[in-house]
Length: 126
Image (cartoon, rainbow, N blue to C red; front, top):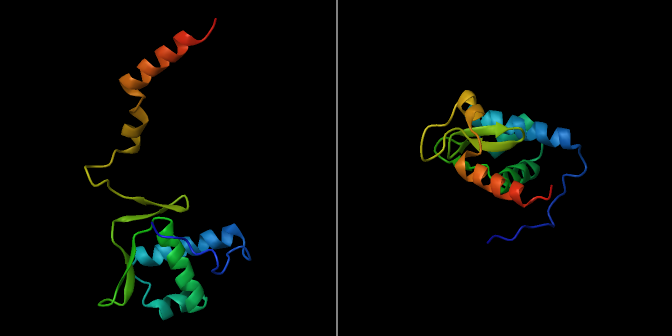
């Protein structure tokens, strides 16, 4: 298991909103394949190269599958996906087709859930 380095620069000097906006912008650039190399990405973000690298490293720690292509000279995701609600989610699960919002709304707890609820409710006094 990799040990986290807590001695690096802290993000606390900026607001959480600013931090998340930067992550969203990096995510957008990666999905559009428009990051360029570290120097170009740093210029686009108007940040130092070391701070940009810190943001990339932190995104990786959050689960973003960020890779760098020396051939293309750009960052990319090794899996299809995007940042949603400030975190990364894969567009399609590895084992099948994703459910639509309508299908997700139809999902209930199922048989195991109902069995659990019946057992739990029967144990309540009253």
